[in-house]
Image (cartoon, rainbow, N blue to C red; front, side):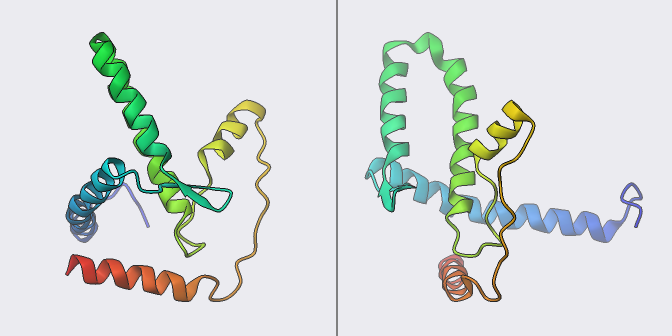
Length: 143
């Protein structure tokens, strides 16, 4: 179909998608603040969940208190940090269909122009039970 042609049903679909994301945003913000404040594990390294984002937030806050003139650069840094954290969260989803390439993968492409990412075959129902449980948890939480 012609994507440049105006279609009211597509516009409504986009609006509904934005409103659904707005609904989820409140839960994500509360979870993020609790995870940062209570030093819960956020990043999986060698099978362990480490509170890496809490550590970075602590050091960034201490640096910003000592050097308030760095506020604009910290705002820009926080945008990149949030994007990387969301990518990491997507990589930890139980369903392989929800995962995305890592930041390091894209950095490698920028440096070398090539991708070392191998095509992985996804087995039927791989991670299906875990993904269904994950989706059910979020569905119950939102309702």
